Image (cartoon, rainbow, N blue to C red; front, side, top):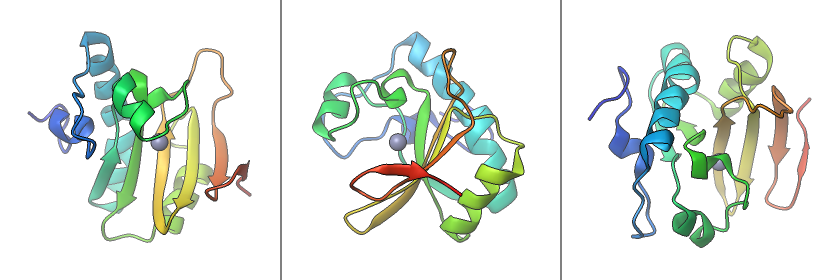
Length: 142
Ligand SMILES: [Zn+2]
């Protein structure tokens, strides 16, 4: 079921863990906001993007060693990989263009995999936080 022009609920709840991963009503509404305000603008500017992880149930999040306070559990975050565009170019645009309001934009790389973590703004901030994660720790994106 498409929830926006280009993103389906299935795509935003997919997990390779085999564990149950069904969002509640609140999380589903947050996934709609994630797709509308974070994913669609990137898709519009850069073409197709692959969502590697969006919503995670508590069990899924624990299995993938996600942070206990991960916005993925709330449906407020998505990990994405551009299909045709250069990931660093896309991340630079997200970080610096200013047209997307986000909580965190993180350029992540771990075990040979590369992705961009994007999350919705948070009530208690900090927001528009731009970070790089190298598999060991976080540093500011400059
Ligand atoms: Zn993430």
